[in-house]
Image 1 (spheres, rainbow, N blue to C red):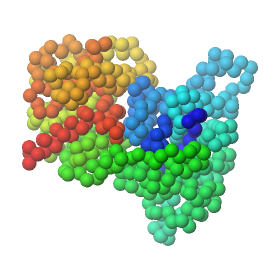
Image 2 (cartoon, protein in one colour):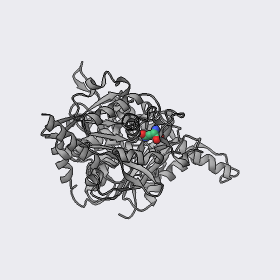
Image 3 (cartoon, rainbow, N blue to C red):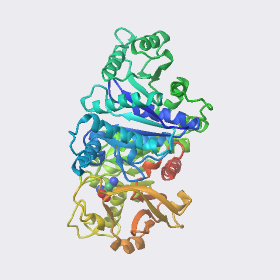
Image 4 (cartoon, rainbow, N blue to C red):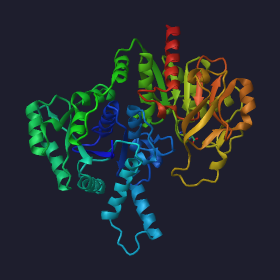
Length: 538
Ligand code: GLN
């Protein structure tokens, strides 16, 4: 396609309607038609990135190959499209303002009064077009965070208005709203949608397509009514009904012809129907499991599922790959201790100890790992989960009494996990961890090698602490093997336990790379090990 086209998704009526999933589904459909598509998220908060946010605030922080700490929606984009995202795919108000203020200090605007319009909106438009100007994409889908009418999203909506004006039908706006069902009157209500479109119109933006999230089907009369009140064609009123899995949404959007309407409105010739055979196969395996395994996810943010979004999704992909339902039981690490552990973990077929920061819940994590090690239960440790596995082994196998990570106990006599050399001088918290994709070399005589099938891999990281090489020999002799190493910095990236059926822990985050098209081999194999464990017990 000659020039990149820009599609915006805005949200009205309520938050959490699933703009990310609609954007991802549309991207999936366009890619399945042979177009090159990327998705970007504009977040209206003032943090530079979500890296400094507590997971309770905004869910998981998703990390890209290039080391950007981003909104969890980027995880959905990658899982649906199977295309990597980057720093350019997530922009916050903080980043926009920082760029404008830096320019002001440099003197780029000498003599001018720096204002929201045009300076902030110009910066927003620039960020939207960075991906388009790379010439790598036919479509850039930009999701505007928040809900129309929010004070903080106004500059973004204004930038959309300007781009629509300047780019004509190279720009298109999809507005996602809620059509609530009122049980008392037994009716679906369109008024909130009408109001939210009016709010958008007050800012000068006429949506081209309205996607209606609903729990009951919209009939034609209702679609006509929304079309009439909101100045769109009836074919541009798209139903998005509640479904059992987010992975159904691309199919729904295909049936509702969302992609076709987009192409027609942007006057793009329709080349071919979307090829979704692989996706359909995935859905079939997901929905027709031949059995069920129970995995315990031991973490400290278990009240909020979004905190472990990518891990939970990776289990869905891995479950489908094995055609097994993976039932993930979230277990609060603070509830686990020597006297509760046997009871809490007894019926699990696999145990995953989650990533995390800080002291809270550490003892429960260590206790769970001891249980998995002693009872031959398949175990996967991720990041802090690997560090806890090292601490547990140090204490309980090597007899290093108060072994710990210096993150939790700076004065431990056995700092088996220690801060990385280049982190010692770092005091700023934002964007300063070891972040993003790094190479790792896998030992050929390992379980890890069997799983990956290759010796040189790349995985994404987000940490400050690492295995302390001073203890390497001692651990290896006793059977905890460093099977994956980053040779450049001599860092232990993967460990496994000799003599245990499946005990693997990794310093990186495999969950960020699991997609529908490429379920992550570690998760796929961990679930397979859990199935074997279950069968053995039966
Ligand atoms: N807190 C640990 C570190 O900084 C682990 C981080 C993580 O689990 N992502 O190294």
